[in-house]
Structure formats: structure tokens, C-alpha cells
Image 1 (cartoon, rainbow, N blue to C red):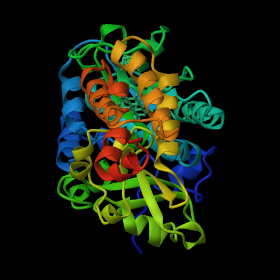
Image 2: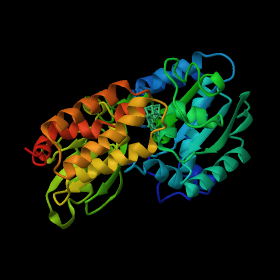
Image 3: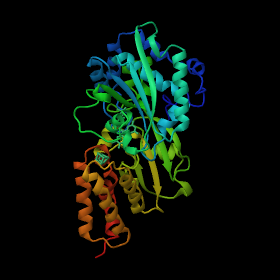
Image 4: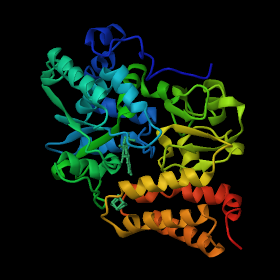
Length: 414
Ligand SMILES: Cc1cc2nc3c(=O)[nH]c(=O)nc-3n(C[C@H](O)[C@H](O)[C@H](O)COP(=O)(O)O)c2cc1C
Ligand code: SF4
């Protein structure tokens, strides 16, 4: 069995609307252990665990947590539950099935860093998850896990829900901060990073839902033991949103180091109608498109870094041989035209031009010069865009030019 259930171990077993059910299944044990120790011990455990953020980029979590703990005065903790990347549904599943694990992770981090205010920024379309999280916060408050003088430790922490503003870019950390402040979701230049100047220019820690859900487990088993799961560079487990032309789509949890092929064939039971795989898109619309021969690649942040993208969200979208790569690319690029916030020219104008160029290929009107233009423009957008949207949106174009170049030549007019 290649599945390893850590984050999803309570899915289907606990009643998500009952704190007592969560407590019966070892819930809030991590928090109990955390608060019996000094806050610095929690941060040491997070460092030992070597956990990296589950929101896509795989940034080492302890660096941000330690940075926030060193800041004096008012500070914030934010759970990023915007989950706008097409092909991803893991954060929704955590919130709908085991919501207290997220709250417990946030309280542990508040205790470790000295933050007294938290926000959960939830994608506006996730109404069910939002209602569940509201009820979860209420229950945690009634039990005394949130509010004033938690566990008589003189430690205070409150959590509020903020609804996402219906825009993909609001998942990007600075756009999210602006949105929480009540402004349109637009990014800022960095540095300074959010742990120095976040919400209202005060220090802010932003982590993904899955990252927070890992903290109770890390504290319960200890950082060293956690670091033994997965690979040297990517520890723990990863939730995988498997979709596309597979027989058994769904959410699976595997240790890092598992191959993409095993996820598709052992967990997803292979391709529908036993067709051949033409390509697999990793991470979502801003992830790379890879050919079938690369499927033995393991799920690992270091391996994903080769693609400069948000591959690490864990989405795997399988596309069989009936599909044309240009249909996939065009869908992705139209999405980015729609989602660009318009603040910087490379992203605002560049995506429109990329769509025009793709249409030329689709209509067999493209020349070799267009191929060069597409490649150059994709690199310009990637290198000069202000925020992560434009810096990662070209990954599917760039990877397709690397692995599926013949598909372009087949459409060029000579
Ligand atoms: C356009 C864009 C959208 C993003 N959307 C999300 C999102 O929905 N959820 C998320 O956790 N991170 C998202 N991110 C990444 C966040 O900016 C940030 O890196 C992440 O929330 C940090 O959490 P982590 O360290 O736990 O991964 C997005 C980034 C970009 C550039
Ligand atoms: S890259 Fe796109 S989304 Fe990001 S600031 Fe520029 S225009 Fe806005």
C-alpha cells in the first residue's frame, strides 16, 4: 500500500461538526503538548521536522515561523485557504473533513510566535467549508482553546474568517494581505516579506491549510521522527488531488518520494478506457506539462524546483492521447488573461499576446518566427512580472516547448 494517512487519517471517521469527536480521535493532543513546553521548543521541533510549505513553492516553514517569533508587538497569523489553482481540492477536503486540525495548527503557531490574531482566508466559492470553519472556531472558543488566557497560560488568540474575493491572484500572499485589509487584491513588491510587513504593515505569518494541519502531528511525534517520513529534502506526506482521465479520481495522501506513476496507476487505477497518457500537468494551470516517459519522477520539492512553478501543491492532472496540447495551453492562458490583476504590463499585455500566438498555431497560420516569439515572450513574462502569477503562469508553455516541440512544428506553416 503506497498511501500513508497522516493529514487525512480522520477523514470519514470524525464528525467535522463535533469538537468532542475530534478530541476522541486524539484531537488537540498536539496543542496540549505544545503549551506544556516553551514556545522556542515548538519552533525547534518545526525546524527539526524540515517541513516545507504545502501551498506550492515549498519554502522551509521554520524560517518564516522563527522570523515572526522574533518580531515584537502586534502580529498576525493567516491560513491561506484560497485554493484557486485549477485542479486542486485538497484544502477544501481538509476543511470539510477535519477542520479542527487546521485550527489546532494555527493555535500551536500562535503560541510559538506570540501572535494574538489569526485569519483564515477562504475561497469565496467554498461556502460549505466556510460554514464548517465558522462552527469549528465557535466550538474551539467554547472549549477555551481560543480566546483569552488559553489553558491559563496568559496566552490569547482569536481567529476570524475572511471570504476570498473571487480572484485567483488573491491566493498570492501580498494580494491576500491587501484583500484582508479591504483593498483590491493586488500584489506588492518584496522585500519586505510578510513576516516583516504584512497586514497593516505588521508582521504576518502566512501558511497553507495543509501546512497548518501538519503542526499538531509534528508536535505529537516530534520533529526528528517527522523528518524520517518522505525524502531528505521533502519530509512528511503530501495530499495529492488526482484528476483528469484516470479511472479513480480523488484525494490521496502519500509520503514524499512516491512516484507520479504509482499515484496514477496504483491509486488512480490507470487511464480511463486504458488509453495512452499523452501528458500530465503537475500542480495546476501554473505547473509544468510533462510527457509519459517522465512519470517515474518522484514527488519531491527539489525535483519540482527544476520547473520554477507552484508544482508543489500536489495536483496531478492526467490527459490521454485524444487531447491536443494546444487545447490545454489555450485553456490555461485564457485563465491567466482573466485572472491578471493588471498592475504590471508583462502579465497584463503578455498573456493576451500569448493567446493570440497560440491561436495562430491552432489555425495552422503560425510560422517559425511565431515559435521564436512565443518562446521569447514566455521568458519575458516569467522574468519580469511583478508577482508569482506572471512568474509561474508560463511554466506550461515553457515545459511544452521543451517536451512537446514536435507538436508545435506539426502546426507551423512552411
Ligand atoms: C497567483 C498565486 C496564487 C496562489 N494561491 C495560493 C493558494 O490558493 N493557497 C496557498 O496556500 N498558496 C497560494 N499561493 C502561494 C502563497 O503566495 C504563499 O506562498 C503560501 O500561502 C505560503 O504558504 P506555505 O509556506 O505553507 O506554502 C499562491 C501564489 C500565487 C503566486
Ligand atoms: S504579475 Fe499579473 S497578477 Fe501579478 S501584479 Fe503583475 S499583473 Fe498583477
